[in-house]
Amino acid sequence: MSKNAITWARSAVCHAWEVAVGRRARYCGADRGMTTSEYAVGTIAACAFAAVLYKVVTSGAVLSALQSLIKDALDAKF
Image 1 (cartoon, rainbow, N blue to C red):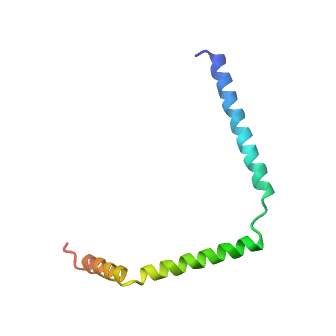
Image 2 (cartoon, rainbow, N blue to C red):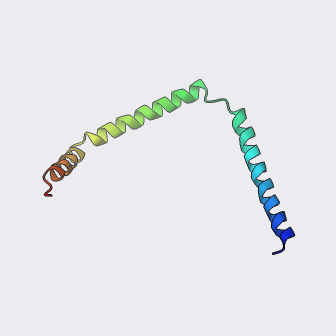
């Protein structure tokens, strides 16, 4: 590759990067955060996920598996 081709390729990559970053910066600048309804939906989704996770973790199978894991770890021979 000649020096001119390398210089041209480097400038093309740099220009493409600046264009992509510039677009992203302009897009992110226009977004000023979530609205109240988005916060409400996000909060409800987080609470629902927490409830499902709580039910799974407190189920009998998971509790017995955790107890078995802890018992095996404490009974380990060194």
